[in-house]
Length: 225
Length: 262
Image 1 (tube, each protein chain N blue to C red):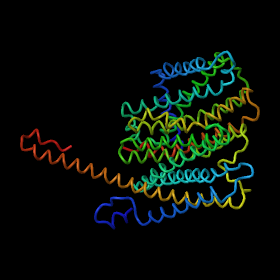
Image 2: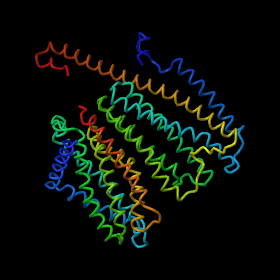
Image 3: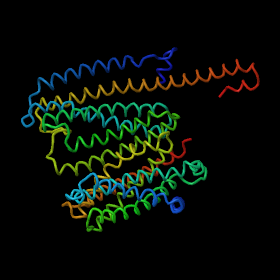
């Protein structure tokens, strides 16, 4: 167990080091995310308060689309140089490979969400309150997106035409995350009444379920030749 | 499936058998009875009027679809464990039939909506959940259709089958909480236990008839898939034999021409 976590941390660090050198997340995904925010403003009238009311939804939709890119990138680096084979032969537990990917994705997504959060505060004039709930909702949603994304990322990497399939496969699965994260954020921002904690709990259930599933199912996915 | 292979000296050319003929006959009779009870014999509902009749189709189609996806998930787990073709084909066949029943559910949900609300679509919990899950399993079918090595295809589909089924209750909860607040409870999708005698009877009759229909479709679809795999194998062997024959004939032309066995 300890060795798996250590290996996972090692692999996550490798991914993040690669990211720091290649700067794909910073250079491509962040601008893309900010661009999506702008596009929403072009599509929906920025003057009539539509953007303000829809802030949470637009934020999380943007996160989802960017997460698909992040997942594709996370596995492109492995497939490109035959690294998947190397990982398979290295004796590292598949669960560690999975958790490493999840770890790296979580870090990238958190950075994205912080920057997007600032973007949303500036562009859509959103006021950020309810920090506790917001942080928990965002954390649970991020882990869930990373866990589901890591599993489906490898899956898509094994298929021909896989990268164009990834959105079709991943996004319906993440529909409940979008719903729960948006509603939870709305409550945290004071836009909706009621308790946001059930939404956070649902996100937690999703995150745990897909962490467990991914840990177990990564082995058959990785070991197929 | 071994019975099929062992009993016939020649390869089976159709997916029909005594079992399917019996199932088909029972399904036909059952559906006719449902039509009779549903459209004629059972009375209109006190609240919903004549529109309750669509429930006799809607509840079974959605129940059968969920059953189909549970079968897919169980077969997926079994495939990852046993690695036999039977489980892979069962998972895929069940998913395909399930998608068909989901499509039927969405369709009759929209019909009910048109009559009741005047519009084909409303963001009501059942319709939304069914549509999201429908798209999830469309993804499964798309993955099945990509030409891949059988073992890779089987593994990838099995993983999707398992991950998708876990998402069903989570999506249900999320959509119910989301839209449930904004919409008064609709009977659509739930069997009201206070239904009158013949209405309840018709609902259960319909459930039974649709289950038999599902079994009939599943057996046929499974056998079709099995035949497809055999045909693909034969096609492969024929292609290899052709290449070898080519190699032999052109081998006499010179050393360079004999390397045609790929």
